[in-house]
Length: 352
Ligand code: GYE
View (cartoon, rainbow, N blue to C red):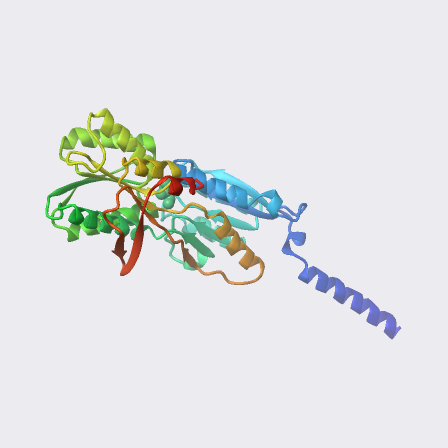
């Protein structure tokens, strides 16, 4: 009898141990219990730029069925309300992980609290969120946007000094990104701080181009009308805005480049098309912003799956690309960064 009780106990212990050790997927009612895949709900900002397309591709390639994932991809068309809706859907579907590329920094507390209460880890990618309680998200990976802005401004200063224009009055217009997005906040700040330091730099205007080519063009058209021949530099907060601005400049009968009467076009992202414009001398400086976050987010998920604690915030290393070789390196935040002059090899090596 004793033996029977003992073995019955042993069996139930084993069953208990198996259930306890068994993956949470087996016990899950939602997610992708059938396939055993890890389900990831990704709320993407939209498809406003080449950078964004490359970012979506990176996520889709990484979180593929073949890699053991079921990805639920939601394009929010640049609207926060759509992102909030998507996150609520992901919670309802009991996904294993929520990945959020937030359109703006604020306004996330309530929905992220809902995800936390549901026990779903949230990974923030690309832009940041500003929340009252940091435990509302598990980890963030993206760029240091203010540093990008500082590098760009440091390059402009060095370039103007090098070409004998260091004391000239320099009129700058800023075509900003989506207002309230980390990429806009950081890049605008980098320029504004430099304008405060360099008394001969005049920030004539700052206006949002919403990170799109069409809005970039529209804003540049109106700025050219308003400021006539006064603009020396247009600081575009991404490549697509720069493409639009260049179209507006040429349509107005003006030229871009490094000549005396040319407008200097600066940009961010360093997409393949952006770098091609750098090589052709249309964009003078393109500060890199790396969109290939899929593998980085996967690393975070793998760490969590292994019961490890990933780093809370991870910054990506980024380069600086120029059309001219006048400035070899720039210093920002006490660190030197090399400047790469774009040639065919650089363009060929660019995957997006
Ligand atoms: O620079 C821009 C995109 O948040 C870093 O968003 C991203 C920015 C990127 O639309 O092209």
